Length: 174
Length: 182
Image 1 (cartoon, each protein chain N blue to C red):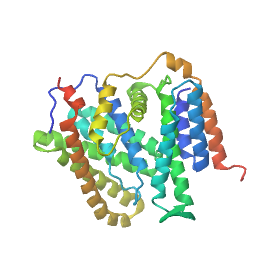
Image 2 (image 1 turned 90 degrees about the vertical axis):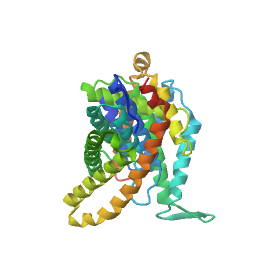
Image 3 (image 1 turned 45 degrees about the vertical axis):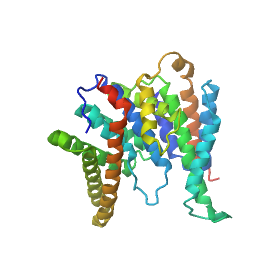
Image 4 (image 1 turned 135 degrees about the vertical axis):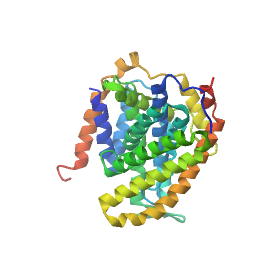
């Protein structure tokens, strides 16, 4: 995994740029029709994964908050239970990804971090759905986790490629 | 005044009628044009038609007609118009927010304002293609590295748009609620 020698001093500007990228990717994701409602690829999570490499840990949570609020505005889900799912899933997965990256440092790849994020996000959402909709919701768990595993791997690979190829990322080390 | 921009976004999102949403997106474009902002009509038309076509590929609801093997359905068509209008409308609303002097206190307010500015920048310029996804995103990030959220003259020139946009959005939102049972 790409590791920076120092964090950028203008963190808030980077948060805004990555937040803008989150909204832009949410917009792209929104255009793609979904055969199964609420199942999505999660490309808007790529900037969150990038932030794990380029931002201090506390700023990653700020970005997650901006992404959840802004993403819900773009998709029109703000003030709905979908926003609650999104925010809780994003925060828990964000904290899990930060913890894993701190605990395992360079021993875990971006694909591993992405998988942890995807699975914890899905688990949180399944638990929340079970609490709100009743015990029947838990039967959705297995298919959702399988889809989460596939999408988490895909997003991890994509982010890994981005971190290896990006000139923008390389500029942080200069 | 600036909080009205956010209220306009929420009202616009919650308009259910595809045609009213389309009309409002058109009004946002006209307001931007009136404010002497640079507007490219063709990309908006292409975007709208692309979203409609994508949605028509998943037919549901009443069948309007057949186009070869493809069933053209009313609900898919309306869904496409609604999604396309939402995308275009939000782009022009965010354009308005980016140039307005938003005074939400604290760090979060600043972050949200700047985020919408950069979102607006991402939607402009070259398209992001599936095959060159990483390079396209990287190029956009590199281009944004040297830009900062705009303040000053453009803000003053366009500040009054907030009220026009809010009042128009509110009127169409009320119409969408159909209080007179048309």
